[in-house]
Length: 466
Image 1 (cartoon, rainbow, N blue to C red):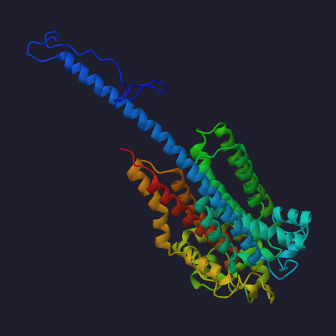
Image 2 (tube, helix red, strand yellow):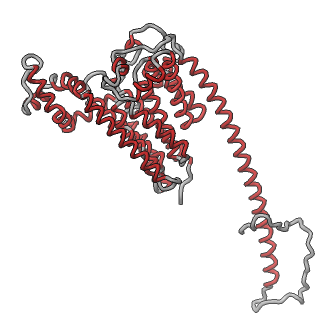
């Protein structure tokens, strides 16, 4: 039975209303001897009772919904306080004994900008806040805030603590105390992934879009390799572009921003000729040590035994042909794809991301939490087959239950593709410092899997469509 419109007063079984009971003589009968009046009366009574019960159920439903909202608000408030306490604890754990950021030889290139070969994002920041304690505080605060926000978006209070501990892993936290762009690259990447998840869930506010635009612009101008990830962060805009107010306009702004960063990176790379240094190291480590690769390039004009005899002749050939011949050789080799894939989960055997990298003895993170963060960093590097299956599971669940994948599940797959593209370009774009160059891809490898786990939980909680 259907319910009456809200606001109407329906009689109940206990309501005292005068009811006229007809005598048997007054009751008409049908041709088959049935009593239609009594049947109508019984139907009306059943309808009244059903509507009243439905109205009472509606009231109970409203009360239950309000109670659920109240309980949920209290839970979110409790998680917020827990997240705040976790942030304070993490900040205490994260603070190092050093008072000024440590410098590496690449730091001088950032400080020499615009004469150096680096992108302008980090040098401008150094000019704004200097290289003293202010930079140390800024990088540590950004790391904890961005990783913590990612954890909050994915798992609320517990996620803040887990992501904060991950941020204190030596492979991540030690970059916070260096005058290098790696720290803010990891922080902005975590922030962009968190904002992408919120955009996937339909949050299309102007403030969120403004924060995403600023973070994406700063992220793209920190390192030239970061621009390869940006196209894969645009999926929420493409998917929700028609649903949001001014959605198409924001889609074109985000796409235009990405294209502008691509152009800026191309111009800076060509102006600084930094590709020469990267390709030179790649030739030394991957071409000269491989007889098959040397034969390939010698057949295309490379001088034989360039390391010993004809260095000037090789240099002339290198500057003229390396920019075109080396990428073609990389793309044509099947082994190029496999080796970049393997390096995504390769452990840091040389201690390149540890305290040895900076050759200092001071405590860079709290000794109690560093092993836990290191364990979480290693554990989150799941085997590749588990990683691929994990990225596909939420989309498969959505397709089976709702006949279409959710935006979050597609975003996890997009992040996975972006991870491999960035790893492939970073590995083959240089021949030295692989763990450092693959740091962003290694972090995105973990972020994509975390988003896939989040999407799986959301898919299982979402009701199926008949």
